[in-house]
Image (cartoon, rainbow, N blue to C red; front, side, top):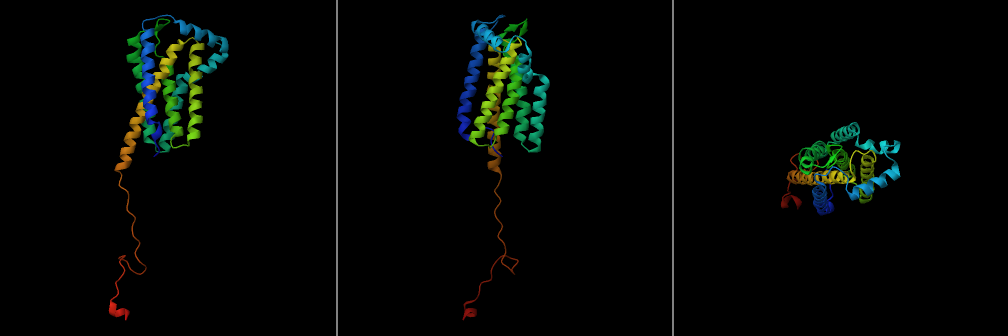
Length: 236
């Protein structure tokens, strides 16, 4: 069973996890208690609206990957494929990973930072957390055991999809830009360590499985597999 995160990417994954959580906490502290966009948010909102419009058709299309039905369908499809392939690690990660990330965002981080949009808690973006978490698990499952080139292509696709998610949420005025950044950071900060733990458990289980010893085929005409030893007198 191939690892979700290649061995040479384990240390970089830990570094990415620490950086993601650090950025999420810093943004949360800076934006805590606010009910309006900050300077960076206003600049990014203007740029997004200039590119894709304000709640236009393109904005609705970009928002589609964050729809609850789309996310649920992607998660179910991922679990079904993993069950068919008997990738139990992917099944557990696809179910538990996004659930942990969303629960942490909605029940812990949002009340702690108390940032609001239209009077509702907005940081970090729950839509961004849920969608990016599911798509991150899907990307890792898709590239498990794949070549380095294919992993790079998949990572680029993941990055593009993440930008689409963030842009759609901002263009439809569902979240501040920094809300979406925080959501992506939380999703990555949960899924990567969960995948590392899953790989560690899988590797240890695989190491404990005994290697079957090859069976010696008996010599032709001898069921015991032991060749008879000729007496020296018989050879004279």
